[in-house]
Amino acid sequence: MKITLKKTEEQIELVKAMASRNRDVAYEAQMALAEFISPVLVKVINQAPVISNLFNNFSFNEMDSPSLPLDLYYDITAPEYVKVYSTSVPGGLPTNTVVPTVSEMKFTTYRLDSAVDFDKRYAAKSRMDVVGKTFTRIAQEVLLKMEATSQSLLLGALDQATTNGVDHFTKAGSTLILDDFNELLTKSKRINTAWTGSAPEGGRIKGITDLIMSPEAIKGLREMAYNPVNTKTGPGTSDNGIPATDSMRDGIYNNAGTPEFFGISIMEINELGPEQKMTNAFQNLLGGYAASATFKTGDDLCIGLDRSRESLFRAVATDSESGSELNLVADDQYSVRQSKIGYFGSMEEGRMILDDRVLTGLHIVK
Image 1 (cartoon, rainbow, N blue to C red):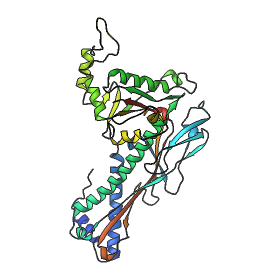
Image 2 (image 1 turned 30 degrees about the horizontal axis):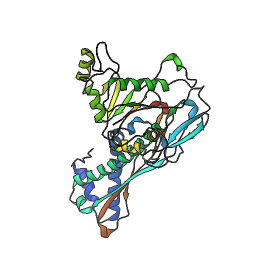
Image 3 (image 1 turned 60 degrees about the horizontal axis):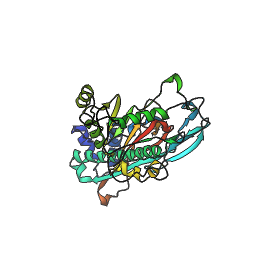
Image 4 (image 1 turned 180 degrees about the vertical axis):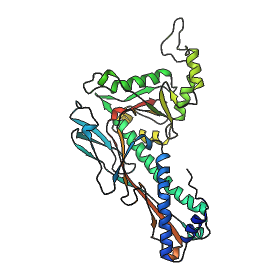
């Protein structure tokens, strides 16, 4: 992520004016630059995330109280009460709320903010690189908080997710084989039933559309091109050493660099993997699958997601004056003696998972 300001005459003069000894002139220049750069930062913040972009966005006025009518997002024959996951603070532990489907579910919103500053002399010398780095830092800090909050909510909901008393996980050995992938697809179809346990509307059983995996798990997919894939002893053999067919191995080998496997979109992230950020966070969760299944150090996690169903939502506030999602203003806390220019940016949002059946997990045991 990099934000670069062009060295045009207008922008150079604007940056120089930010260092003016006249406070009114300096403040007006700082606010003018904030209004100019705010829409750019919003585009960067909304395009750069990975996990955060899995949520469906809708906007609300910053003075309103956002909500969702649950009965419109559940089948008319759904149970009277459903579980909804949300967070009240950035990166906080998700709250599992049991609410009736006929209610209006209120979003709990929170603020993601960032404050940065730089010396006035950089503005006086038209150091556009320093000013650009300043706004890049604001975008980075807000982005990191968005990702951390999204990851926390996703992991917490997956850990607690159960359907008909059965968790949403399957287990795999240290080497990922085709049977593990097949078991996960079957599990996702079993939990996506009607509330009566029968086939869904139209008889079409939904499943996984996207699979979030670590680089180590992706390595296991590539290994299917040359490792044995069967789980049952073949004729005349005493082990499981039967490889995939030539055409299947060729397909896996030739598509090793594409983000798709058997029609499932593959999303590779560094936060997953043995002893990585998201995996460690999942390991420390209590009271759900992570605790009961003894998810230990060195294990890996893959997350299956059904994006064909509207379940993951993000409500974001828009400024009543500018219409921007990011409220960027000149930070006026600095005195003349400090010789600094500061900016403060904030974004108000809320996240919610309405139906945990869209989530499935693959626990790769060390």
